[in-house]
Image (cartoon, rainbow over all chains, first blue to last red; front, top):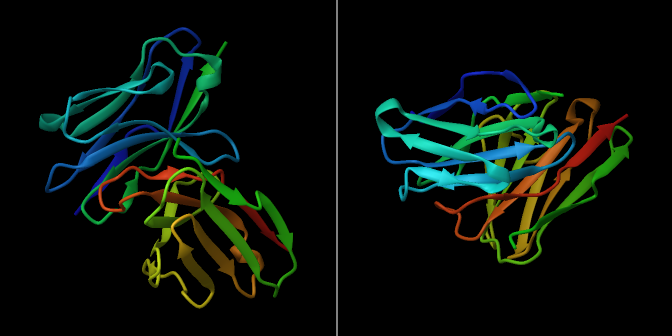
Length: 112
Length: 116
């Protein structure tokens, strides 16, 4: 069965420090993986997407994620957090059905 | 590119009335649109998948007679919540993709429905 697990429900960092949001997936075939960000009362904005090309994917706003098949992970990172990065982040996986399976979400808090 | 709009952004209605939410892909043709429901502090729950010109496919547990979905064109899908009740109050989000199978989904800004 396909599943996406975000390992942390809440992550708190100081402004200017690195961000790490963890995501693991399970799939019997090579998945498409996505990271989305959601600000309060807004829709989801695509940060980046992995589709079996380069394992290191660069996204918008300085975010990137590395696909590690051996670890079934797709963690999201950013070298230096900005106050505007505070939001809800969703890791999701897609397959040949077209549907996305979402993780539970991680709330990123950025402290000044 | 890949902009999806939703209208209205917020709606308040009385119990028993029906509410229609529109989802439009503004700069691409969406062969497939998805409707999600999101409860506070929770992830997105897929309600149904709609393909242009065909009937929507509903997820298990979603009442198709209550949540009517129409995907009449490649740029417009509508969700109608019929005979709304307070428990239907939620944040409804649509997404659209151009091929449906493996393509990226682009999300609308969401509609906050409050049923009094």
